[in-house]
Image (cartoon, rainbow over all chains, first blue to last red; front, side, top):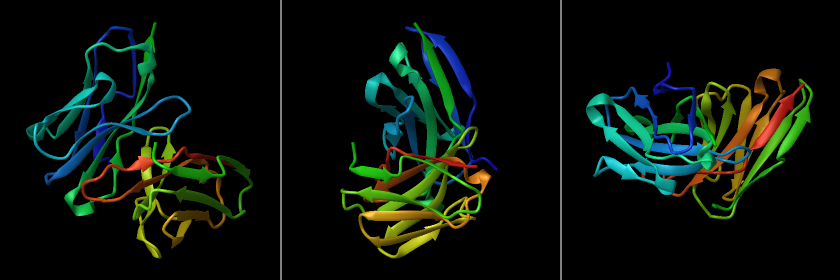
Length: 114
Length: 113
C-alpha cells in the first residue's frame, strides 16, 4: 500500500498563479518530511525538509510547506509560480521504524505556461 | 551539488544479460542508496549500504544485488536483466541517516530490450 500519497498527478497553471501540492502519509509515529524537485532531464534536488520545530518550513526558490500532524499532511506551496518552476515534485518521508529509507510519493508533474 | 557520479549514464541491453551500474562519491559519506524511478511510482528503494561490505534490501530488491568494497563505490548488478527492469536508476548518499538529507546522483537510464 502506498504510504505517501500525492493527490495531483498533473497540474497545469499560468505564471503568477499560486501553487499548492498535497502530500499525505500513513504512519502514526515520528517522521521526517521532504519535498524534492526534478527539473526536466536533471536529478532530484531538495526543496525543503521538516525534522522538528516550526511546522511552517521555508525552502529554496520561494517554496514553503506546512506540516499538520493531525492531518498527516505536508503540503507544498508557492504564492506565485514562474515558468522555470515546471518540474516534477516529489514528497518523501522517513519513519522511526525505517530511518534513512525514503518513501516517495508518485510525484506531481507541474507545467507552468507563460 | 554533492560529489556523486553514476556510470554509465545510458545503457541499452538485451533480456538475460547481466548489467552493472556504478555509483561513485567523493564525499566520504557512510550511507549509500540505489533507487529506481518509474512513472506513477515515484522512486523506490532497491538496496542500501550503511558501510563497507554492509548492505541490506529495500522495497524492490528482487532481481538486483549490490556490493560495496570501498566507501566511495556502490555497485548495483542486475543478474539477468528483464524488460521490467527498464527504468531510471538513481544513487543517493547521506552522512547521517537519521537527520541528514539524501543527495542524489544524475541517474542512469537503462533500457532492456
